[in-house]
Image (cartoon, rainbow, N blue to C red; front, side, top):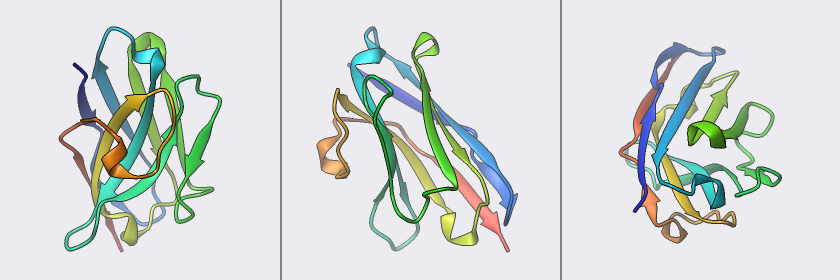
Length: 123
């Protein structure tokens, strides 16, 4: 079973940067595709970005392209989300998710989830 723990959220000013981390408790982290989703109050949970098992394929929501970067460190069983040029509309709870091998952009396709970390961007 896979357990995921997010960290790194907080309060930042618009235009600032933040890096989120997701630590996985699993023996074979390298075979899992990893993703970040986010959910704001009153909104549906939405896809942000994902990285496949090899690290060679990534995907980003149009709203974050050019500003966010996903990466993984298999030696540390950790996936990261570097967020730059943050906007107030990025405010949400950010969730880490995992599934076998291949990227998907629908939340229901991911079997394993963390508890989330709050990101708040002030005007």
